Length: 467
Ligand code: NAD
Image (tube, rainbow, N blue to C red; front, side, top):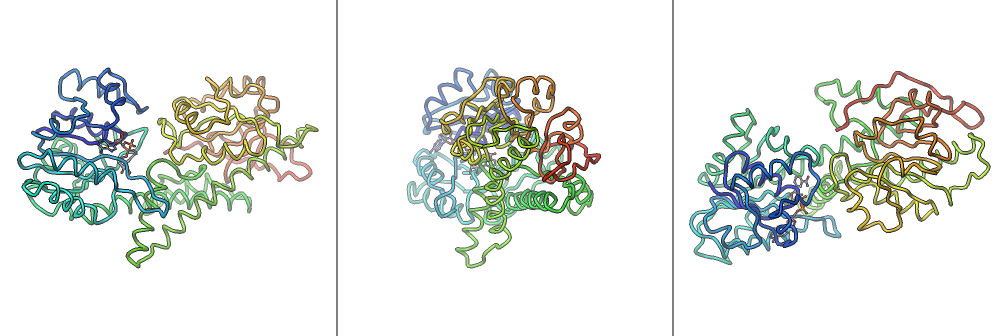
């Protein structure tokens, strides 16, 4: 079968490359000519582990091609996947304009029966709306519209596509369902369960899943704050509650708030659609508010921790302005260059506004960050970022940050102070290295308990896998 994918972004490129790897003939179409020219020349425009190999392998085998022209790519396609962006509008609703524009373009090029598959995350009711648009643009067209939301995660997208927890197919006619089942048949053989349902439910499943996960993140972040206030340990708490199979252990590590291109916009979109339906989802609304509050508090935490450490380290110049803070990690999570709604976009400009010099390093996201944050000094290595810093802030859980050379860090920094918003290290280990260490929901370490310092309570915390 021949598949055409509209939108060669994170989802479109990964889906296209993976479908080609499953043996189908795939054409990826994008309006971004530079992107398509780059892909044709073998340049993969996003950082996604393993993607380049899959693209190269399938492009060389002739199964994967890249186009800017829609018409030839649609004419003999059995299925056309729409995988364009659906960013949030000012009022939180998802902007489906790009999906609608793609649908109208597709309509004009349709020849023979074609299944139009909406892979973009869209509000309930988008399927029938797209069907109307296509029907108006091309009354003769023979087509069905289906929903097939995508659940891949950036950073592990290839594995997530090839070994999905489930495949959701929302269709209101059997002919379309059969085509989609055939396309995913190679994955069914890997025991991936298929949830076949109606379009509205399929559309809602995606929002519900992301909102539930966002709720877990917001919940553990609130627990971490509470642990800090009352002297409990969030590592032990998260582990213990996660051992309950009804809760599950994923997404129970605190961090600098959820970000990325999905959770922030999908929680907002679900809350907005529920409001419109006069059926508010109060829990999701609270999750959105909780996350925003959490991120805002982090800047105050950085200032409080740093000032307290500098004072106790005997530094006379305890003001925040004029200091240098090294920042490790800019992407919203590790293994991606995506900075959309990353906490770095909120925290770093705030630090700069407070007169702090920010020296940042990220293994993949520096170009993206530099295009939107001009006030930051970008360093080409972790070491360069640490040079002359008064404190270091960890924002992303990149594996390379785990292998920290503490002696090197101390030799480079003006004062060995670390604020870790990913809880990457065991406090007692960092403290034993002579580094003042502050993380989320765990005791501080590396400073003598004295004066205003809370008593450093070292516990046997273990480093868990980071989601
Ligand atoms: P993206 O911004 O990375 O890519 C979108 C691509 O679509 C861009 O390259 C853009 O040039 C192209 N495009 C826009 N309009 C077009 C048109 N009319 N014709 C051809 N190309 C067009 O977006 P993304 O992150 O891949 O997200 C796509 C959708 O998938 C969104 O609805 C998102 O919510 C959903 N989703 C994203 C992820 C993720 O991790 N990124 C995961 C699951 C679902």
